[in-house]
Amino acid sequence: MTITTVPAGEWAATAERLKNEGWQLKDLTGLDRLRLTPNEPRFEVVVQLLHHEHKERQMIHVTVEGDPPTVPSVMALWPTANFMERETFDMFGVHFTDHPNLTRILMPDEWEGHPLRKDYGVGKVPVEFIPQPLIQIDSPGQSPKSGVSGSLLDRLGQAVVEGDAP
Amino acid sequence: MEELEATGHGAYVERFDELEGHMTINMGPVHPSTHGVLRLLLELDGETVLECLPVIGYLHTGMEKECEDNNWRGAVTIVTRMDYLANFFNEQAYSLAVEELLGIDVPMRGKYIRTLLAEMNRLSSHLVWWGTQGLDMGAMSAMFYGFRERELFLDFYEMVTGLRMNHGYIIPGGVWEDLPQGWEKAVRHLTELMPKRIDEYESLLTQNPIFLERTRGVGLITQDEARGLGATGPIARATGIDWDLRRDMPYEAYGDVSFDVPIAMEGDVYARYRVRVAEMRESVKIIKQLTDNMPKGDHRNTDPKLTPPSRTEMAHSMEAVIHHFKLSTQGYTVPPGETYAYVESPRGELGAYVVSDGGTSPYRCHVRDPSFVNLQSLSPMVKGGLLADLVASIASTDPIMGGVDR
Image (cartoon, rainbow over all chains, first blue to last red; front, side):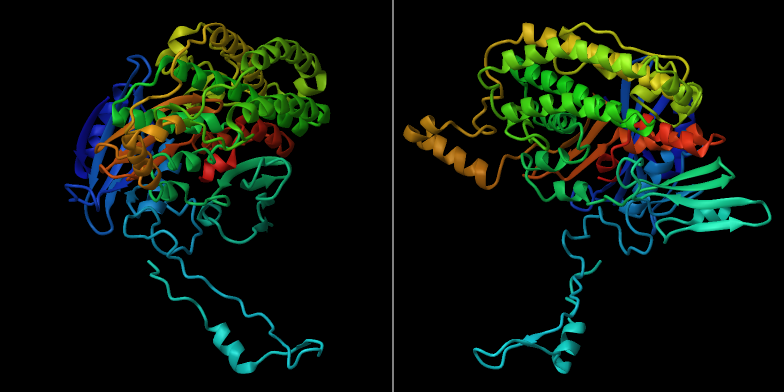
């Protein structure tokens, strides 16, 4: 399997040539090079292509630059890229120009951050504690009576653990 | 439609456009015939489906991210949970990728065991599809029969791997344990039983006039649409695309067995039904050949840097103890590199894109799940059809939401 690197500016033209040669898009995903060497530019779009007649595969790395990282969409050439580009946008924050509906696909719409980026930690989501009524037992033998301590409830209500939210 | 497309994971949608008489409704995410938590946004004109947009992500648990936090061996237990009806295929694709990065070979017996289990898994996965396809068409007994036979397969997996699902049995380098005593008898029992049972299934549905009425000419997709939308597996083969990775780009032991790749030309629900039933028969053929020719020898790579030593070896070798300690605390490292490995799962091409930075855990582990990609073919299948036929089309795309959402 050959691996080639293509800059984002040439991707649209390269994709069109490959499509005309009979290559089919099988997979499109992202790669965050933050902890790899070289780590510039940081984001890449990784594309897997398959040729049915030649029974060959090839992998293409599209280097993506800018903030937000932007790359042309290939959905017009290969409609199958629709979900894959949305997933890459959702997980890496890579923007695909000319994509008709570039919205989050796996995470909720209001989600902040892009989970598969390397600086997005595992388990760093703030945990929200819901206040529960407290049960106070004054002395042994007495039946527990339910009561809510005002000050404690206030504290619990605000007790949202401050995580390293992305 | 502009408004509809802008709606992603938002709240429940139900709208009636008084001017045009169109209705926008949700189907799912909790609905008995969406096969899991699939939500479809439908625009209807009476009973005719004008637009169908799948909304997914309800089962997303960040498995690809979790893989990056596990060691190379541990990530197997994550990927196996993706497509939960075809666990062995997930493990196989991931293991093939890691083996390529490691540059190691799997002993012949290991390859045969993997192929054997993969083919049995194809059968058991198709049995669930057969049962649910029947159930969605109103043939409830199909569900009972399909699950009855699947139970026999799950018993076999339990005998071999210790677990009925999520096995973690196929690992980089081979398989975790050799086949247990008596496996051959159990497999031969299944290969003798299954052809008779498949005949039984066919006598229930294949010529059933109600089933034919509900599936013929329903859920049509053309070959160009299927190709463009990247459909693989039975959906593509039911439109006449003659492509099967097992035959065209053989991996593992598929080069040593002979089998046919069933295709159909119509591209409707019935064509996909015929392709899958024929695939079940082919799987039985492959399982028979593999059982007859099962080679002897090691079931996994014996490199001490990759495989923990046996207990007896550890009793008298200091080196073995050190290897065991290293492997069980930190695991092995994989040379830097990247690769894409692929297998033909019951739903199509299942690929694993794995990147290593030379460390003890995957730097990136992406799985191209066929259910995720094939779900895009649902929209052209159902547009212009009746709402009741939508159910037939969903069942025939056979989506597994664990694989779609990962």
